[in-house]
Amino acid sequence: MNKLRTMLFISFKRLKKGRRLDSHNQIDEQYSLLLSEKLSKKIAVCYHIDCTKDVLHQLFFLFFNRRYAWSANDLQKKAEHDEAIAKVRRTLLAFFAKIEKSEQLVLINKDELLLLLYNATSYTWTSAKILHNPSEDFFVNLNHYHEGFARRIKKELVACLNREQLDIYLDDSVINQLLFMLVTAWKGLMDQLEASAPRVKAGIFFNTSFEHSQFLLNDISYHLKSRLDMTLITAKTISELRQQCQHVDMLITNLSMLPSPDCHIVSIQANLTPKDFENILSVYSEIVNANVTAS
Image 1 (tube, rainbow, N blue to C red):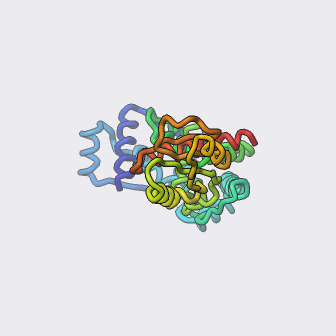
Image 2 (cartoon, helix red, strand yellow; image 1 turned 135 degrees about the vertical axis):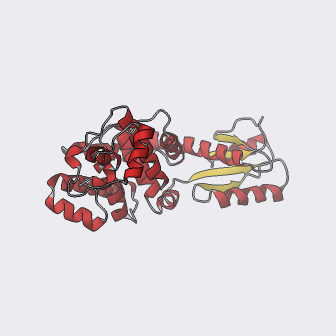
Image 3 (tube, rainbow, N blue to C red; image 1 turned 120 degrees about the vertical axis):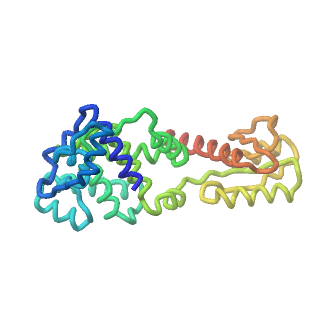
């Protein structure tokens, strides 16, 4: 309901400024809509707009869109009678197959995702660019913690959509919106990404007590078990520390002035905080991304 209110408010503002959607050829003329005289007068007073048939089509364009599919079966039927729709459907399915194979993931709710992305292409006639787009921050974090996953699937999506001449509007903002919808509606995606995350060897070295160090090791392992193979560093000298650090990629310690061994160092507090986990993940991503670049 909130999305409907937002859509109507934006449409009223757009129409008041004389800006119209170039979507007349996608309007299903068999459907009509009439507003009560009282409501029509209120709209005229507030927005100085007469509620003609064309204006109502502009306001409620989603409901008059002849390409919009209400279910996976409806989409299948539309594709059988409209080659333009069939091409979009085939392209999206080819994209799904490509990322399942290349990323070794499973689209559990493939029909739902197909319907969602197809419908998004059916009601997009212009750029989706806004000044501050929260989805951009979302993808930055996703790429940071999942080794460029969003960049790779964006590249595949662009390649698939450009492979054929599709009767849809496309630019970078629309591509990003389609990706945002895909990633956020993909059931079980984060679990699959975590399960397939590269593992990094990490050592923990604290100058407190053996028990406290073991406690921290267990705590970090519990939260980051899919990413880190933890080991306890028991060195008594700098020489022993450097020797043991040769077998790990990352050293987690509370000693900020520790002589630099041959691995990445993450300084954390004796009592773990969310910021400490963020720092550990940041170094983890740096190591993994470096390995990907090197390979």
